[in-house]
Image (tube, rainbow, N blue to C red; front, top):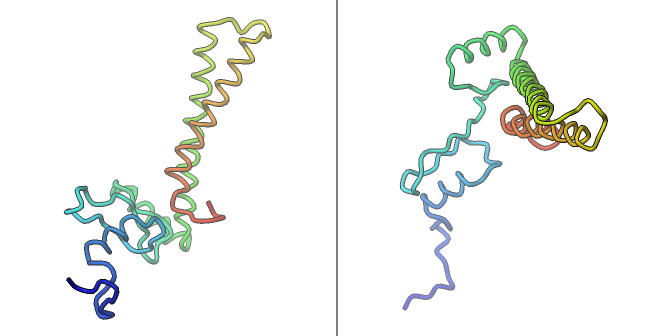
Length: 150
């Protein structure tokens, strides 16, 4: 039976497959990490920045071309415009959610007199719009920022 208390210092602690899996699982890793195919899953869909760019590539080539032009014209600030655009689109969507929820409450009840129902309708529509704003902004707009920037 071999002695397991000593280890060959030339041999790494993790195998190449284990190291690839650890890279895929580490969210703070700055390199492009791809989940190994033999680990039972598809490659990671997490997008990483390309060095020298302030923005993240999208799946649409036309948007990527527009961002590249904006990057050139603004001196490397296309990422700010990309975040601003997604922030405004998500904010507009959240406003529509607020109005839609309030319209549903008005359709099914009476909001003409200040009552407990109208307070419930205002608070519910407001909370739904907060969730419709926070969750997508956290996932789409600010997910690439780290620490206090986020």
